[in-house]
Amino acid sequence: MTESNRRIFIARSLAAGCAIAASTASRRALAAGHVEETDDVAVALGYRHDTKLVDQKKYPTHAAEQQCSGCSFFQGAPADAWAGCAMFGRKQVAATGWCSAWAKKPG
Image: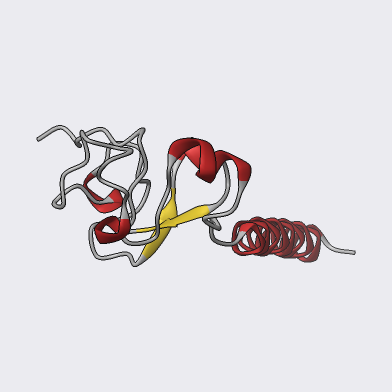
């Protein structure tokens, strides 16, 4: 094998390894799925997919304009319908959702 062929082989092997690692990571993220309102942590935090359905008597500090997309724990872009949440590990929450850990994003 010439020096040039060896370099090409190594470069392509590294690129293939990176591609496999990236696809595995994205598959794991997709496999995490959405938070269900019946999950133990979701129940403990009073999580709802729709902020309009929050029990106002049980959570009197809740305000209708509070949504996951405006929370500092929401890990997505404002336009994302679902994104990760620091409170729920790898699972995703609805942008229109709410839980009692809600904290306004700075800014």
